[in-house]
Length: 296
Ligand code: GUN
Image 1 (cartoon, rainbow, N blue to C red):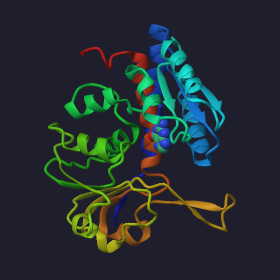
Image 2: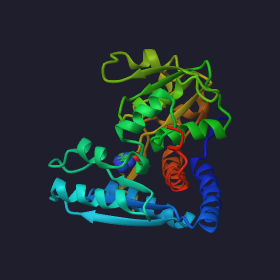
Image 3: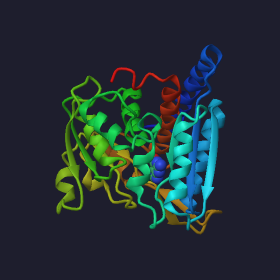
């Protein structure tokens, strides 16, 4: 029987640890961790993500603010909010929910967030720090995957990890985390993308297969190596007339078809998703604690 990795319960454990640490920080230093979230437009998936992030703040006792701006807002209004939060003593983490409307230059917005409040880990300074193995904020989904591997005692050192997807948010930073010369990493990493004409050729060689492309059920049983670990980052909304919402969430991996071939696998929902939020709370706590950028 495969191990079904319960991201929801690992996340709950991390959140309860952070609740204790957060209240200690407040009691001892008078600092309550605070997160500011900016949501532009009315993308339903973004609405859900933001709601879940705020709910997590409430759960761990962190301060949170949400600013909603219309789809037609100008870049300067977004920049003004970020500048205010950069200066605020109550805000330790700033998150701009992506995607942004077309008239707004995403890179310009992400660059405006102070790297020491960049709890999403998207600022080029934090990406550079990650690449060099320096302290900094790690992007939440890759950090969540590293935490899953650590807490389920799946060692990747010397193993072949194949990542499908080269996004700035998941694939690229995750590859860089996994090949670092550290005890919990040290993997041999292959990244697959649209340039891979025979995807199966690579995925079948993976001791650990991580899929993050946003293509429902891209990976089928025949694509995975027997006894491997499969981590599914996909969160795809597909129509489901039997559901109240009219849709259901499915991963990039055909979970039912693949699971019995694996040693361990993450489900969707309830796998990587909850870990992303736990890591956002962890980054917000670490920012409030103020030690991340101490050394350099
Ligand atoms: N959109 C999809 N995932 C993310 C995320 O992790 N952070 C932000 N800011 N936007 C997203």
